[in-house]
Every structure is written in structure tokens, then in C-alpha cells.
Amino acid sequence: MSQVKKAIIPAAGLGTRFLPATKTVPKEMLNLVDAPTILYVVEEAVNAGIEDIVLIAGRGKHAIEDFFDTSFELEDKLAQTGQLHLLDRLLKIRNVANIISIRQKQALGLGHAVYCGKPVVGNEPFAVLLGDEITIGQDGSPSVTAQLVKNFSENQISSVSIMQVSDEDVSKYGIAEVEKISDHRHKVLSVVEKPKPEQVKSRMALAGRYVFDSQLFEELKSGKPGLNGEIQLTDSMKSLLNKKGLEALTFTSQRYDAGDKLGYLKATVELALKNPALETEFKKYLKDLTQPWSRK
View 1: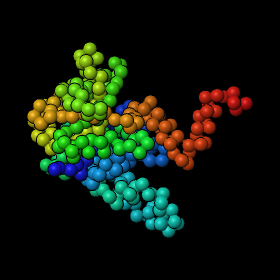
View 2: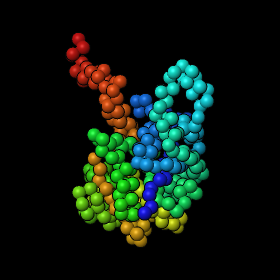
View 3: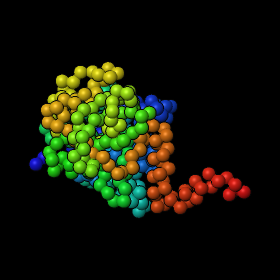
View 4: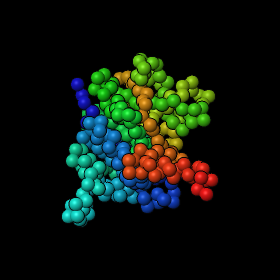
């Protein structure tokens, strides 16, 4: 039985929704309370049992590679002053996972970015986690990636995470037509990339977390440019589901689109409220902010 031990994190986008901030700072390095967005994504992968994490980077993304690299001067200084614990989250990642960076030389779409990871993944199953989407498990429940990894381990079939969206948001996502198998598990019947609401009956959107059989690479290799002239991941998913099947799992984790300004702000506020060092004072600040008369 194949186990999922590798993951690809596409992180080559230009981050145009956050300009001018992302002109020199990768959007994946924008901070959420006390850590960059990309660290939350990598932590989710590691906590799901992933050992090899492939970052698909583009030009100007050296900050991501530097973040996961060793900083001898800083770490030596922190060790001498007894403050190395400030890097505990990062050191934990480095101790249990291999971080591998691959350059996507041309911006040819998400499908192409995923295919760039083939030299590392080879013929093994693998997870894909979008680098600007954050999912936080609720009350100790498994993360979205952990659920997908478990489903593949048990059923040896590619699976994706899905969530229900409003009519207004249908055209922002890949939409899956599904047939229910059990409470959270569904058979995928078809996938359409960013359709108009009237073009599909389903309102179940792809939520940025996937686990694939290595057969997906063969479908990507022969993929043709689709929407916006890019090689779409959803087009190869269609071929994969026709040949080997595809399942979808709903989830209870909280999800944030940290690649969107409003989603980023929501993530910042809600993660701050969950931070033990900030929770009480920040909650009081928000309360005062929404009730200005209380400060008189």
C-alpha cells in the first residue's frame, strides 16, 4: 500500500493582489501574527506525515528558500543568549522534513507548476498544498491534508478537498460535481475550472488541498493550455478521474484565502485571537474598537 510522504507547494505566483507590497516580498512571506504564510502551509504538510516538501518557486522568491535555510549567525547568537526557543517552529520543520526548492522557469499555470515537482516526486503519490491558502484544524481534529493522506492510505485513490461556496463565488474556483459516498466522502463525477454559476449545478469548490496518484504527472505531461492559456490542474484531474477515479472530502477545518486581502485580514485577526500571548489584550482591543464610546 503506497503512503503519501511527498508534497508539492506551488509558490511561484506574482502576488498581484498585494502590490505594491509583493514587488520585493513574496506573498507567501507576508506575516500572519508571528510567522509567514508559507510556514503554516508547510507545518500542515509535516503534521500529516509528509517528509519531502517541494517548493515550486519563481523569480524573486529567494526569501522563501532563505527562510527555511540555516542562518548560522542568528542561530548562534540566539543559542548564546538562551533564546533559541524563538525559532522552535522553524527548527522543528528542519528536523523532520526535507525542504527542496525547484524553479518554475515560466509562469504556465498551476498544472505546470505541479509538474515541475516530478523530478523529486517520481512515481510516488503526493500531496499538493496551495501556498496562499491556510487551513486550521478545529479542536484537535485532523488537518485537511491529514484527512486526504489517510483517505489515500486506506483507499489508494486520488482525493481532493471540497467546500460549498455561494453563487457569487463559483467563478473563482474549480467546481466539482460529486456523488455522496458517506458523510464526508464523495465520488467526483466531473471538474470544471472557474465556470459561470449557470454552467454548473454543483456549488462544491476545490479548496486548495489535494492528494494524487503519480498518474497525474502523465496527464499533466500531455496537457494542453486551457483557460487563460495556462496548463490547468483541473484539466488533468478530469483525465485522472476517468482513468483511475477521484474522490472528494469535505472538512471541518477553518480555511482562509490568505492570497486575498480580506481573507488575509480575517486570518490575521482570527489567528491572533487564538494566540495565548495575544488573545486577552487583542480581544479587549477589538471590543473597544467596535464600541468607541467605551473608551471615553
